Image 1 (spheres, rainbow, N blue to C red):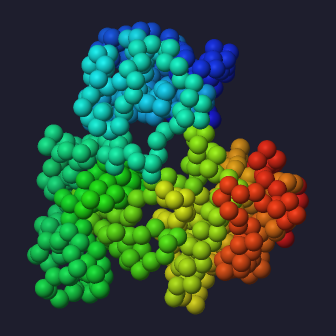
Image 2 (image 1 turned 135 degrees about the horizontal axis):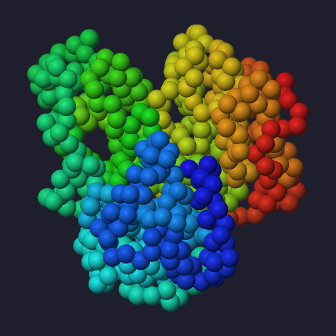
Image 3 (image 1 turned 90 degrees about the horizontal axis):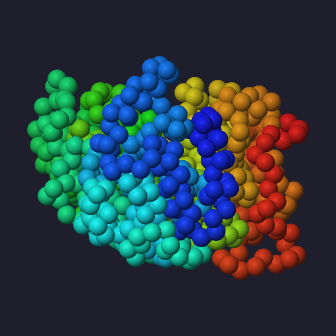
Amino acid sequence: MDQRSDEELNQFLASLVDVVGAVEDRTERASAIARAVANAMGGDVESDDAIASRWAETSYDLRSERGKLTIPIGRLLGRCGLRRHRALLFKVIADCFDVPSRLVRGRYYCGADDAAANVVVVNGGEVFVDVMSAPGRMFAPDDSPASSLSFNKQRAAAAGVTGPGVTGPSGGGGGGDKDAWKYYANGERASATFGVMPGHDVESVAGGFSVMPRRGDGATSSPGEASTAIGSSGSKRGGGGSGSGSGSIDPDDPIAALSIAVDLSIDAETIQLGERIGIGSYGEVHRGLWRGCEVAVKRFLDQDFSSALMQEFTAEVDLMRRLRHPNVVLLMGAVTTTPNLSIVTEYLHRGSLYKLLHKPQPPAIKAALSEQRRMRMALDVAKGMHYLHSCTPIIVHRDLKSPNLLVDKHWSVKVCDFGLSRMKNQTFLSSKSNAGTPEWMAPEVLRNEPSDEKSDVFSFGVIFWELCTLQEPWNGLNPMQVVGAVGFCGNRLAIPEAASEEARGICEDCWRGKARERPSFLEIQKRLRPLQGPIGGARKSGDGAKSPEGGGSPAAPAAAPRE
């Protein structure tokens, strides 16, 4: 689903402005969305089986017409859609019309791997909303309609999906700001919203978690993979004990470096996987439990035992294990056995800074992101980056951006994802790998020129601009246009007129064309400290600070290039 290029979907959303947008009551609005979804995707049906033949014909026609296996969800409008398609469309519309909702999917909650359902907030409780047989009807997991949707009531209830058994669109829903999701930091159970990794047996596992796959459970191994642990000489590594084994360390062993000082290897069977919280080209990130502690499990998609993969894996773990700072994500350990090569880190409940700033959030979260809090977040990033740049040799992140900054339940920001990090040892870095994301990258990196740690300073300037404006950088431009605008035309993001002189100066200095003229993160910290204030407190009128809300400029290139 790509809303930017899906014209049919955008036209459908526009047509709902009068039908859905005019409904003031949030519960009524959710029901109206469900009815609109059902009407657009084949009408009221009892189950997927009832429209299986229609869906088979529709999907065949659309794939043949497009010549592709993927189908934009907008192309299903006016035809038919299964439960998972309706649930996805409901979620898209709900986000557009400020209806707090979440997507529940998988066998663990819905009874089938490819099933999905929607949960909305009603009167402070969480209830399911039907988009199939009785569109718009809402009910708690223990109400009779839930059985017709194949929901696992016991598991859904254990996940915290509870609330009044609303059987119609008249649930009141007038909670205002109270209609917001309970954040995990506010007492939600650790097992909430956990799903199942494909292929896992959850029948014997309690608490909403499943074990990682065992060797031989449908996993393929290349010839020569006879050892139980990569880099282990005939002995299986333990679950993260303090010892490194009785044998001597083989210098040619790619995992031997992990056993120096402390054994960071973790037995895959000691980790219980929860829902997937992210995915990228390298792998997927799951929420999990390890020894009673919530962790994030970064599991590599490519589990083929190759020397290149192991070198990359070992390098990232070796880098992260030496880092200890409150504003750098903490490494817990690594799973060194196939098919579960994984990096295990602490779990940060609020997700990425990018998501908090640019994705729809409940009113309570929006209110919490005050200017004072955002300035503290900027200081957290500067502290974490100063620590990395103070290491010997210097650690250059090379992919510093708001999606790689995670926020914990106390609103502290931590730097993560060192997959592109390199160490500077009396030489400049090679930037020939086209690594990173153009919207945050320094011009010298975009031009494939030698770069050093000051490229991270430029990226911080973009992040600071995000915190000041609450806007996405270079929104509306594709990556190649950003490369041309920043790397070759010298353009920079437009700084709002309402920004304070201090904030404007930080952005301008971080974005200087000559890398050596950009400030260090230690200097940035000193300049950020005067901008700090008590959370919820008012800034003094004479300090020149102005709130950027409501006064931001569009994320477009500045009128004049910078030197």
